[in-house]
Structures are given as C-alpha cells and as structure tokens.
Length: 336
Ligand code: X2X
Image (cartoon, rainbow, N blue to C red; front, side):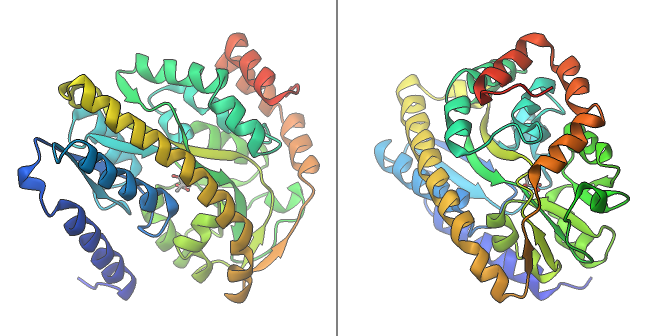
C-alpha cells in the first residue's frame, strides 16, 4: 500500500485533533463522537472544537465531544448511516445530501434561489429552516436550530473556465450524492458524476472528472487548487450543514446537559457563519497566488437555462405547493 504525503499529513492532523479532545475521555459520563467531511482547518471544525471545549467546561467534564474531521470515519453516505444507527452521535451534513433520507430537505439548495447571505439567514433561521427541521425530525433525527454555513458554490475546472451555460454542456463534473445536484447539472446538459467528498481530490487528480463545484473556503482548505486551474464565480447555489444528532443518544442526555450542548453548538454555528463569509471574501487572493484563474460569469444566463430546461417546474412539483410557497416567500421572488 502506498501512502501519499497528503494522506499522511491529513492523518496526522486528525490524530492530533482527536488526542487533544480525547485526552480525558475516560472520565466523562457522556463521550460522544462528532464526525464530518471537512479539513481540520475549515472554520466548521475550528468553531466545533471551541464549542466542545466550552461544553466540557460548562458540564464540569460530564459531556465530552470528540471530533473526527476529514471523513476519518467514512464518507458522508457512511456517516449518515452511522448517525442513524448511533455509531456516531453527531454529524454535520449538507441539506442536499440529507435529502437522500429526507426528500424535502434539499429545498434550500435550489439553484439561484438566494440573492445574498441576509436572505439566507432570514430564511434558514425563520420559516424555511423551521419547515426543513420539521421534516428532519419526522425522520427520527435530532437537528440543532442553527444551520452552519458552507457558502455560495462556485465551479472549478482543470481544462476551461465556465463562462456561459453552453460551457457546461458535456462537462464532466463531480457533484455530491444528491438527486437535486444531479438534476441541476443534467439540466445544464453536463455529465454529472455523484462522488462523496472523501474521493473528490483523487477524482480530480486522476481526471475521472474535469471539474467540481464548492465554496472558495473549501477550494482553499481542501487544497483543490492543487488539482484545478479555473474558478468560475457562478454562485449557483447556497449550501450549509445541518448539525444532526442520533435521537437515542440525544435523549440519553439529561435535559440540563442537552440545553448546554445545544446552546454552544448553535452559538458556534453563528460564529462559523461569520468566519466563512470572511474567508470566502478574502481567500481569492490566496487562490490567485496558487495560480488559479478567476472569471465572473453572468448568473442570469445560468438561471434562465435552468428555467428553460424545466428545472424549477420539476422541483416545484416534487416538493409540493406548500414547501415551494415557503421557499418563494423566504427568498422574496418567484422561482418558476
Ligand atoms: O461534498 C461537498 O462538496 C461539500 C463538502 O461541499 C459538502 O459537504 C456538500
């Protein structure tokens, strides 16, 4: 077996993170695992670690949350099974991927729905978020009130900048495992391949696909600039991470401890949103210095291409009139 330098570095970072958090694991009354798919350097992991420290402190060491970043416990698909079975107690997941279990959870990821962050947080902390959390609860998972930010997604490529919707025709692009993602890039006429994030770097490196799409914070922290040349600022959808808990594990916590855990996780989410917005705002210079080339396509052309392909009509029908009305009210415009 060959271990690349990259794998080795990732492994070392993960071990360091776990050993710092897990040092007094034996003494805690509740030792819970939190698994996720992002590098240790991403704000989501940095803020989650702070929250775990505060939780340990405020519960006098009774609750210890060990963080397993970077797909250390498996891909998103694996981790979703684990949080359902109780193999891990906590897991953060994109609403779109969660839709493989909770179909209407992906509604916040409809292409070009949100014009800006203000609209995102009003919706996700308001009626749209409440609607989705209701759907998640029906699937027997617990979800924290505040969704964490992933960001507005941009398209990267190894072989050409994406300037117009025509550039997406036949384009081999990795998408996360979710019917909405596949449908959106199929509507553009692309050749989308569903690949868990754990495999994305390798898939790009070996040219199984020519491109992928993610917010700049991930293109930077997951070092995708090493295997991609162009970033096209399409802002084609907003994405976040619901903080999920296994229901039995959650209910094992006495109510006062649950309140402490939820308080710190929700506060950390709000701080992480600010971190990611800042990072997405200033990381472009870093990526340019790593020799990525940027372009700013006109989003209206892409939105129109989706409309013409019947994308919005199709998803309105799938989600149903009630959910669609909440979405349109939340984003303040008609999406059909
Ligand atoms: O898989 C992705 O691209 C990522 C990291 O953005 C998500 O979790 C959806």
